[in-house]
Image (cartoon, rainbow, N blue to C red):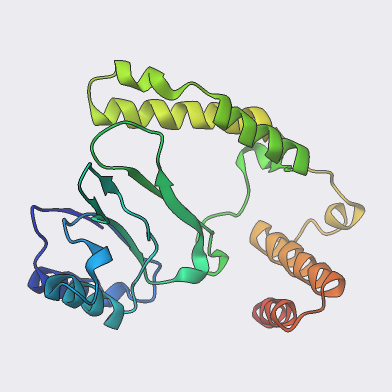
Length: 229
């Protein structure tokens, strides 16, 4: 859900949360420019009420740095709230993209396999292989890319599409899809459905992680997956 207004009213936030209540068991992200400065929490009454209402409904802010900086002020008015922090892999701002007087925000989301209804396979039954070397090359390519080409574009949609296309190009270059090796066990069990194969693979992966690093957290993850299988 996105919002943009000159000033988001707390009453409208309450109405929004009421409408979202039926989907409270789903992962929900609320994002947008509300023109409410979260850095003034506890100082400005409007900000405090805004955050408290969202917090009482289970939403937490995941952007903590100013998103609009001028010569005389720094405010956090472009927000991303989540109702499940466990599914957030990272979030932040792009400080080097000069697209507007606001800094662009981003969030990386983990897939929640318990709620995925579609087949858990990549196109053409291929897998992504990431190594320390490929991650380093990807990071360097992102840093060395000249992003100023977006300045030649005239509207926000074109700029967004151009950034996504360039990012995807760099990503595919460093993390190409590869056909996974078929094991004898997979070939000897043709009756297993694809979702069950994925579940077994996930369970085995969590087991090896637990054996390698036998922490309480890893044990709980493995036992939970084993119970749900």
